[in-house]
Image (tube, rainbow, N blue to C red; front, side):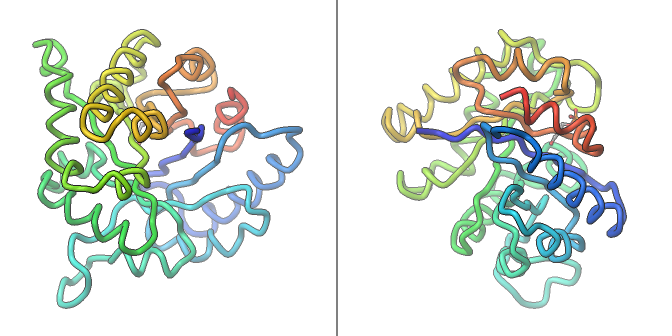
Length: 252
Ligand code: 13P
């Protein structure tokens, strides 16, 4: 059965010391929780990955990079490969975040390469999809999301695809304080699962974790996560402090 996952995405926040202090605090807080009903992940900047991974000694927290290169290795100044990410102890990589698509020109074609390299290096991609406001207003959200999945992921075999985690992040809800309603989230997640079932069959679709992202917080997480097709969250702003992140973990 699919896993519930609550993953933080720190984006470009926290220096190294703050990052380490966060995971140390979160680890203590999690070990005091009776039962944790989801996997907990923190998505840190590249340069924090090794130290943050080393600071986690309980197995209670997984570490994610926020990106990786679309090339294996070589003369690509400033890039960080999937193999490098894996060598730090990180187990996940967030790919296709709308901020990467919007500000750094990441195309479906590039994301396809990144996904293959992430999988080849044993990383679990947390693959982001989602429509912008104009697309939702035009009623095109389903076709936009379907195309993002088809173009970047449907080259994968069913076995490869079963290693992917999806994160539906409507761009109009990211950092805006405007959350998709639980109904909007459920409707899209069910549509995504149906799309996966058509391509890979019901079993793969049922086993894929689909997270929601976009102004999720302690106040709305429970209601969002109570939907049958919402398997957790990818959390931006509210993942930056243990006091705001932990209650989201505990929403499961
Ligand atoms: P916010 O939770 O700050 O809206 O960010 C969501 C997000 O982009 C997570 O990847």
